[in-house]
Image 1 (cartoon, rainbow, N blue to C red):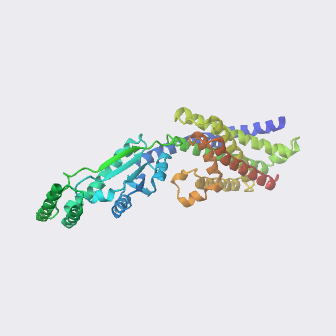
Image 2 (cartoon, one colour; image 1 turned 135 degrees about the vertical axis):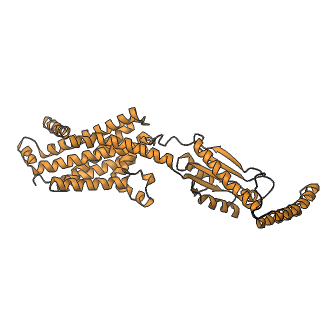
Image 3 (tube, rainbow, N blue to C red; image 1 turned 180 degrees about the vertical axis):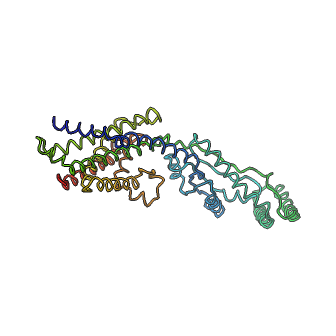
Length: 419
């Protein structure tokens, strides 16, 4: 045990003396997390399109036409679903708001008189900005239909004729009212034909009714962009540790240090275990530092500290195994460093270490399961803001430990003590 601790202390001292390695292991991840979190916050606020899901309970040609019009707006990103699924999407934060077109919407939109069209908006009551924007967009879009009706004489004639047919066919309408309307509408038709080209504006007619319904959003969502960027930054720091310790093994092999260590009363297993323990301690130190800065500077408070400790330990074990695997990737320091970082960067690219998975193309999200970076971020986010239960934490942690053990075994089997 004394020899193991001495070897571990030796590697930790070497890391402390390597100013460049120390910077990229401890300082760079903080800079990355802070900068990327600020960028993400800016992207969120600058986003033009609001993600909405539309529910069509009217299911008429008019309601379909209205949805197509919404899909063509730059202000909205429109998806479709039934009411239950739409409410879940808003509640879970997958969509910003729900727009519901109730039964009778199409008919009300076609009618010149009577009740105006009714639309229901469902969203988190805290999203006041989105509520105002949506109400404005929907009011303008609904009002366009009225304006088109009164500026198009042919369409106006058609609407008047349809209204007259409905009135004459009605058996429940008051006779006096029926007589008044059957006299008034033909006169209106004649009046509209006498207007100059362009018709008249419909400003004097009833305002479309837009009702807001509160949908309380689930608490399992990030409250600020730093809750997303710091797990990513932590991964970069841990990858730096894995790459750095992997390269030191190559350096010690090519410089004959491992041969000299084997001549001492130290076994092969102790030498590699000391390297692995030093890498484990460093990765845990990096993760602890980052989340300490996140907590005190950026108010990133984990939902469960025990879960975060478990996640950090499993991530560290995984990348200790990857460190061992990277150490056999090249015969020289330069080749091992180049190949190792190429592998790590590829893992980060497809695993959400550069861009959050939610913003990546679907085809790339589908292959992200092969990257340990994805499972590392998922485990840490599960403890920070996803509110993972112990059962939900089992899968990412088991995958991480499995990758770590498999990588370590492959590296151990292929490891050569001499260059």
